[in-house]
Length: 345
Image (cartoon, rainbow, N blue to C red):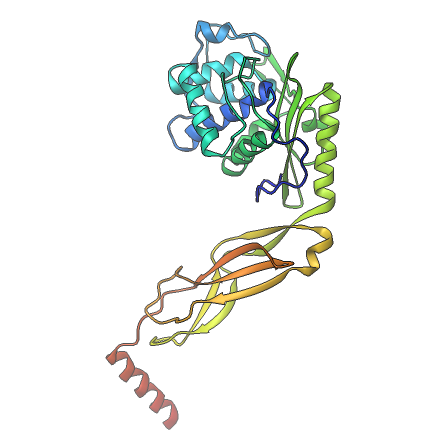
């Protein structure tokens, strides 16, 4: 899947409901990042550990109920070594209990259109009914990377430590070390789920997400993820279609003090296109029927559409570069007087 556009470039059994294992934590991390970016919590906040959190099996950093870690340290442990104890501690910190937090996870999944997913816990340890699909995992991975890019500060760590160097951390995602452009994201494995991975990478402004579930071995999931990413980067590219504030067209403005106005792109934008088709992209500029003053800077006055074989790939609004005042009686006399003076000179 393309991170920028959410377009699926290749899929196989993408909606099959399977056990996600610790890839579940993509949703947990997403909710943590939402809380951080909204100001609800801060990286420096301290998080204590309950008996419930210490009781988690599987991957962990062996939290003690007598210690506290910052949100920053908790995130590092979750992203790098998939710490189940830290995951539960953060769920309790944010929502008061894991059960309430899991409800928030399911609400977010529904909002993202993850129709194949039901979360039963926040960590991914096998539990009856705890299911997702490759497609749904790509959706939440896209949401995390697209709207909370600071998470890459954690998901790209290869080796680090906690507790003043006493606890070593080595990333469970081997692609961070051996795949150029890798930006994360999350591994997962259990005896029932087998080996799962949501992998992300960026090359030449194209960002891709590759999801592999139920790999037979750890190496199989990494190799399959690399093959998918290689396929995407080999066959597709991200082509910039518009730069914010770049002038596209100059138009005449009716009933205006200034007769001409530049129309500029409202935002930066780009197109996902197969490399073999990039030369066939067509562009169409559509303007508002009656462009008349007064006009405010940023007002939408047109659209640029980009087509390939009749299909719209992208559309960008054209907006006014500046304010344009309406021609009043006094300004009309001034305009006429200035015109006469120019003729007499």
